Length: 428
Image 1 (cartoon, one colour):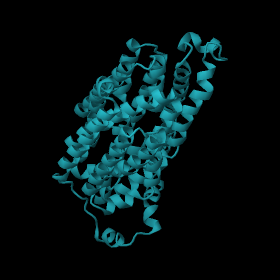
Image 2 (cartoon, helix red, strand yellow):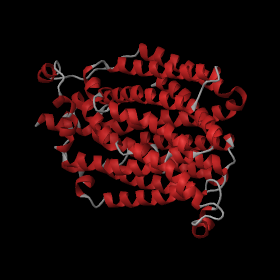
Image 3 (cartoon, helix red, strand yellow):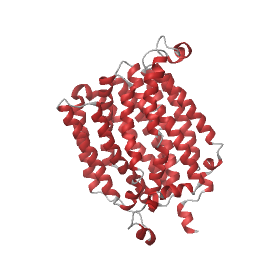
Image 4 (cartoon, helix red, strand yellow):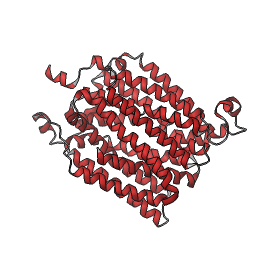
């Protein structure tokens, strides 16, 4: 975990610097949205076969390969930048490569969780990983915001490459347990056929509670990405006159909030029914995004970002704890990959839609003479960034409604009651 933490800091610093570079180059939200899009698309492709690979191959080796490939892609960006040949499409291409191998790495780690962490601590274990993410969000923007004007993109990329080397070196000496498999599974694993590729989907569709949870995640993810990170960064930059210090401070507030939220969950452990934690934290997280949209200066953005960050790790931790409890460790790779493909398939659409809606509908509509300025201008202001703020607020309201409706859907609300844990089922 220590090596991955160091690597995460370097990666987040690069993400921060690339976002600033792309905004300075284009001044539009769509290119930043496309960076998120090209990071995500390959994960959907990989999820169709990655689960089989993770359940077959050595998971430690997969994680090492993921770090190495990410390191080489960063080196490629650095060389292109130093030769004055770096263009925005190069960023898209490297994001495709990083997305593919990064997904394999994350899936291998996620599927290894149940072999490392005791069952009663699944939610805490997931939260501890969120602490890593939160702390990296604290340190990375703060460091990158200060260093970017001094050492530029070149220096940030060099730091990132160094962190990859450290991460691989630490991971090389760690022991990652492989799950135990039955003789039937061992004999079946010798031949890779199409039924094994769709195993995860059949597993989920045979369990109504997991299917309901998957559908809820699919809808929530689409709405969250339509008003999420790909839009928040451009909104802050537009409304602060491209002030990197303000953006870094806001992202740091996100990170502090995420660290506090993950720490609280680690100590608390969450409610007995983790589905309650998932639904409530999802709704409250969307509410904090509305507060971010209403803000017009760092004095409101920073406390709102802290509140939003607090809820970032909670839904994912509760969700992962449910799946770790209900799915047998030996097939978690295939099932988790199927879950990822099904729940993330609309995310690229959400990311693409966010930038297009901002640049061609909401931003023009919220100019001083825009057709929505007279209606919403008193609440969200007018001019650069106001349209993105309105877009975030509207979509977040829809997300809250979907979360409330989730409580009325019995298979989702009772998923933990109606479906036995995998260790209990094996004793029957």
